[in-house]
Image 1 (cartoon, rainbow, N blue to C red):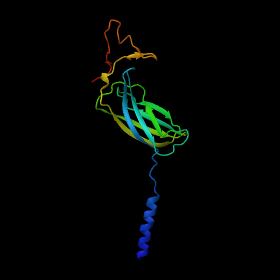
Image 2 (image 1 turned 180 degrees about the vertical axis):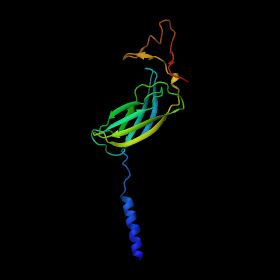
Image 3 (image 1 turned 90 degrees about the horizontal axis):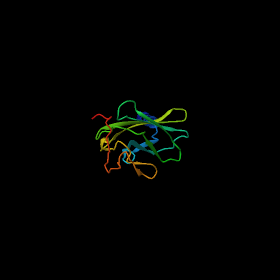
Length: 166
């Protein structure tokens, strides 16, 4: 009788051990807002660390919450098998508020469109975007001072983006 009881426990343990968790292909290794004052552009930047091989033809689809409101900003980034890190950058964004968390949803899909992994993260800025100039400070490949900001009479007009609500 005892042997039968042990056999049941052993079989249960073996069966439970056979159930696999979904494979983690990547994890979020970094997420920040980038404020490029020179060109007056802010973006999300999310980096993923590869944990397992990713099939050829896979794509990362990132949906960034739009700080200005409206539909999320969507980016599709082809993933190359040799990459150890994947960088996802949003298009330019506006109206980022200090200490407010913004959501980012990421899906890895294979060449046929099947979802391989889904991730979510939050990005919070320690700076309000209102500190950004409204126009680029420099223009051209030589970083020439923008004459719309740096006036010939010596005054400076950083302006502000009045489109964002407080």
